[in-house]
Amino acid sequence: MDLKGRNFLTLKDYSPAEIQYLLDLAADLKEKKKKGIPVDIHRGKNVALIFEKTSTRTRCAFETAAHDLGMGTTYLEPASSQIGKKESIADTARVLGRMYEGIEYRGFGQEIVEELAKYAGVPVWNGLTNEYHPTQMLADLLTIKEHFGKLGGIRLVYMGDARYNMGNSLMVACSKMGLDFVACAPQKYFPDQKLVEQCREYAKESGSAITLTEDVKAGTKGADVIYTDVWVSMGEPDQVWEERIRELTPYKVTKAVMDNAGPQAIFLHCLPAFHDLKTTIGKEMNGRFGIEDMEVTDEVFESARSKVFDEAENRMHTIKAVMAATLGE
Ligand code: CP
Ligand code: NVA
Image (cartoon, rainbow, N blue to C red; front, top):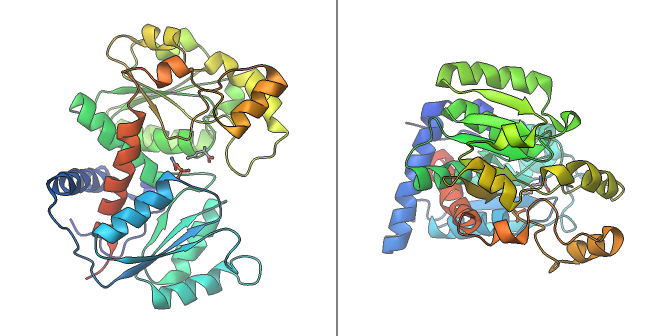
C-alpha cells in the first residue's frame, strides 16, 4: 500500500483497504512504542501544526508522534500567525510547503483545509474542521477493533448533534468499514441528507446500515458502542447553549441508555467531555441551568464501560500512522 504524498482531509477520500492499512500500521506502531522500539523513519523532516481552534489531544498527538518519527514540529496558534488576517491560505500554503514536509490544519470550514492542500505541495492532514475530524476516526476505529476484535457488524450509536464534524465523520467511517451507524437525535440534528445518501452507497459496499432516529430506546437497543460529543462545538456562538441543553438533554448518555444497549456496550467520546462541574463552562452552565453534567453523566464516564482514555491514547498511534504513511522518502 503506497500512500506517500497523499493528503488526509476526510475519510471519504480513502478506500476501506487504505483505512484498514492505516489501522494496522497504527497497531504496529503502538506495539513498537510499548516495546521501546524506535520508529524514527522520518528523521530530519519537519512538520507545521496550524491550530485556529484550541486543542489538547490533537496537538499533543501530532507533536509526540512527530518526535517519535524523528521530526521537528512548529506549532502555530490562533493568535501567533498571519494566516487569514494578513496572508491568504494559498500564500501561507506555498510558504509552509517550502519549509516543511507536511502540514496539519485545525480550523473552520473544510474548504480552508482543501485550499491549503491544493497549494502546499506537501501532504496536508485535517486536525478537525467544522465538517470532519478524520484523525479522530482512526483512533475510534482502532479502539473498537481492540475491544471487540472486529469492526464489521458492530453497531455504533451517535447521540447528540449529528450534523457536525463528529456525526458526519462517524457516519463516513462506519459505512466505509462495515459498522452499522445510528444517529440518535432530534430530526433537526440529523446529518446532511446528501452526505447520508453518499454514506448509504458506502454502506451498500461494506454491507452495513445507516439509521436516523429520534427514538432513544429503539435507537440504542443492542448497541455495541454508544458515542457522544459536546453539544456546542468550538466556534459556535454562546447563544446556542440554552437551546442545545433543552433539545439534547433527552439524548444524554445515562446508565439507563447503557443498560438499554446491553452488557456488551462500551462508551466512547472524542473528548473533552462535560460530565461534572470541574470545568469553567460546566460550572457556568450549572449556574445558568442548574445542571450537573451535559452529554454524559459522570457515572457512565467513570464506569468500566467507558473506554475514552484508551481512545485518547490511540489518537497518538493513529496520527503517527497517518504521518508515517503519507510523508515522502
Ligand atoms: N478529540 C479532540 O480532537 O480533542 P482536542 O480538541 O483536545 O484536540
Ligand atoms: N464537535 C467538537 C469536537 C471536538 C473534538 C468540536 O468541534 O468542538
